[in-house]
Structure formats: C-alpha cells, structure tokens
Amino acid sequence: MNLTDPYVFQKPLMIIVMLSTVGAGLAKNISVPFIDGDSLHPQSSVDKMSAGQPLTDEDRLPWLHAIRRTGIQKCREEFENDKVTSTDDGGIGRPAVVIACSALKKKYRNVLRGTAGIVDEPEGSPELLQKRISERKGHFMKPDMLASQLATLEDPEKEGGVVTVDISKTQSEVIDDATEGIRHLVTVMDHQGL
Image (tube, rainbow, N blue to C red; front, side, top):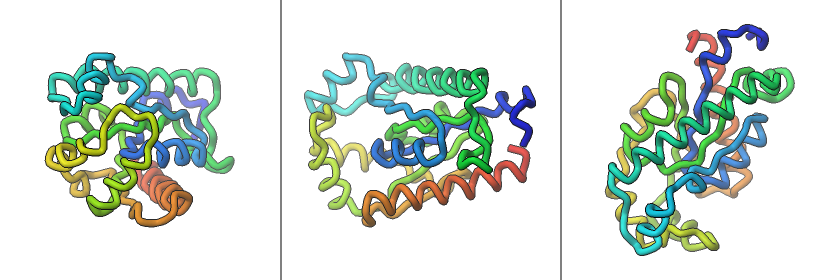
C-alpha cells in the first residue's frame, strides 16, 4: 500500500480490544496509538460505576462517540505526521488506533468501528474474568459488576472482523495471539480493498 496516497486516510482502522493490558501491548506491537476508553468516561459515569450501578445505553452513547472522535483524530495525526508504520517495518501499513473499550453490544461496536474496524474478543470463563477484574488496582469498575456486563454482552464472534483470543494463557501469549490475529485480519482486509 502506498502510504503517501491520500486515500489511505479515508480508511482509518479502529481496533477495539476489550482488555486494556492486551490493547496497550497490541498497540506497541503494531506501532499504532493506544486509547484507554475508560479515560474518556464523563465523571457522572465514573461516579455511577463506582457506586456499583451499570451504565445505560443513554450513558454510553456520548462516551462511545467521544472515543470514536478521539480515535479518528489520533489516526489523522498519525497520517498527517507521516507516522504510519509500514508492514515491512512491523506496522500494519495504514492509520489505525487500538481502543480499549468493553463495547458489550453490537451497536456499541458499530459506533466505534464505523466502516473499518476490528474487534479483539477475550475468551475466558466467568471465573477467570472475575479473577482478572479482582486483580486490577485502582479501577472504578467493581468486580461485582461483571455479572451485569456478561448479561449485557452480545457475542461479537459472528460479526465480521473479529479476532478471538484465549485469555487463559499468559499475558504475553495473549498479546502475541492478538497481534498475530490482527495482522492476519488486516492483510485479508487489504486484499479485499477494505
């Protein structure tokens, strides 16, 4: 792909990762910016979740739009500052951003990815997810909210552009698997002109 082609920016890629540690590692591996969606929550949502109350669709929609706007801006900056890393140099050859966001429902994922996006879905038992959430320090989402998140989750596996990663492995193995899956999917998308 010709990185000087102005058409390249018209296909910014939003890579949605449901786990922030995996997202940060993936972004580093493919040389793109990383956004932790939690950092863009309005204070009212943080307060609500800190009190153990799940967010509604109405709470989430402005937040999702803020994440997408921030992602597009990061991609634009990457493109305009000639920081798109080619595949030969370890990147994915197009403006992209990795976004850590639970994106539990298909309609949330659609807001984030727009016309070009990939979802990296963690696959693990509720017990493993509970353990991982309990190990997080200083996060406003309490472990007892996992049940409401799992009840809300619409499995993205049947959607196009999804990479599923087994999170029972070590953190570095999970990040490596996510990286391999994303690289493969981007190659397929490039061949399909997406």
